[in-house]
Length: 389
Image: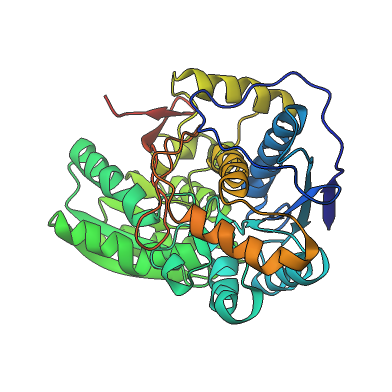
């Protein structure tokens, strides 16, 4: 699926983020500035893509209403990667070779990111900047790979401690998706490490496959072992189904989930079974900062009153960081300079430090992973609340 924002200035009044660094550039060549995006609008990651796409649209509309980039409107060319590695790779090829984009926002999920990254240095030589890929270590695969998000180890470190402190848990069973990249990374590496650091006994690690719908065996085993808590490496649909199975079997122990699980869909699907669950996130939309609440107002209007997971603010911020680097790096937007323009953008993104954003200031670390504000979420009365005081 292809979605294109046509290169026409949006007829809306909008303001840039307060405190946005200025970067002047000469008038660019051409009719538009082409940026690509990979968004999972279907498949297991649909809620993440459906939150990112309208946020990207808002940023483009705002920037185009203010004159675009170098006097030209942004032309955003987006494809639905269906949360599939093969589809993401195919669409990345289209964006780079056929559409001639300067840089790519996405992909969201770690599996597609991990598939594309090894080919960046030799084949694509175009920046990818993910707004929600969270498996540790992936950006180090290529100098063209960036992530404006927090890896799941960074997200989960404070959440695990808060979960253990509240529930006084000593014995845990881990249940994780053995196919999904970030879920497997959390279940097999991140959660075991964090639990052991907190002197927690891991009774067992149980796996399932992404398309599984029956989790009765895993829950039965966890119950028989005397688990005092369940740690999940799962996306929100699977996590919700496991919570409901726990409720069905009367396994009344607290749950903790990672990067992919903490979407609004978890609560919507799990219902009352979600109560008390701890989740991580890489952005918090109840943050009172004016720029956050301005974004909330705009994204709610786009999403019929709903709010996105952290893919929304993180992708919105990437559009603005691209604008900044396109102008600061001095690209020409000439077809003959495409390769050198792409390289200039790569160099600029690697130097970002305290760049203002809705999800918090962006600073790229040594392996091109971003920073920013996080929160410790707990499900209370059917809503996520930030338990950080």
